[in-house]
Amino acid sequence: MKAKQITSIAILTTIALIIFMVEVQIPVLLPIPGVKLGLANIVTIYAMFMLTPKDTFYILILRVFLGSVFSGRIMTFLYSLTGGLLCYGMLLIMRKFVSDKYIWVCGVFGGVVHNLGQILVAIIILQTPMLFYYFPILMVTGIITGIFTGICSQMLIKAMGITSKKL
Image (cartoon, one colour):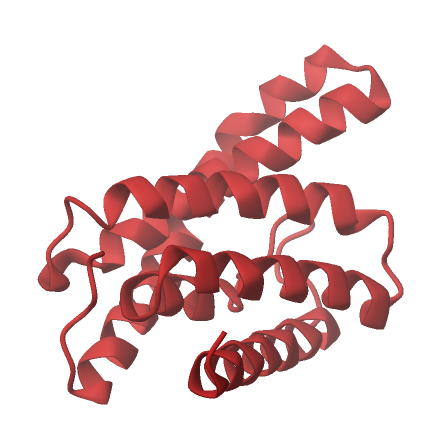
């Protein structure tokens, strides 16, 4: 890896981790387990369109691992990792088809599949298939929070004044 690439990964991982740690401190707005804004996903979407998929993968894995360790929520590692990897996969597909004007849509799809991953992990760990009935609630919240994170990502990319890389 080049020094510039390592530095970009380190800086974006740090930013995502700081955002995650601040968000952990925000009181839950809705009394629904698993619902949060997912603000660190702004960095993931930004990285997917501005860096390579490989760099984005490193940022995601590092943020999820370090976020679990630093927040003291090791049990959430599997939930975050599975949701994050599904979101990564969705972003990887969407970056080929989405123009710079519609990057915000990636936040919506990413939020929904992230929540799908979390509910699947919960079903497996708790051995309770009935938890899938909870998914419609998570889908709605994933859409709402995804719109927000997607718009923020698109605005960030636009503010940087450069066109996304679609490799």
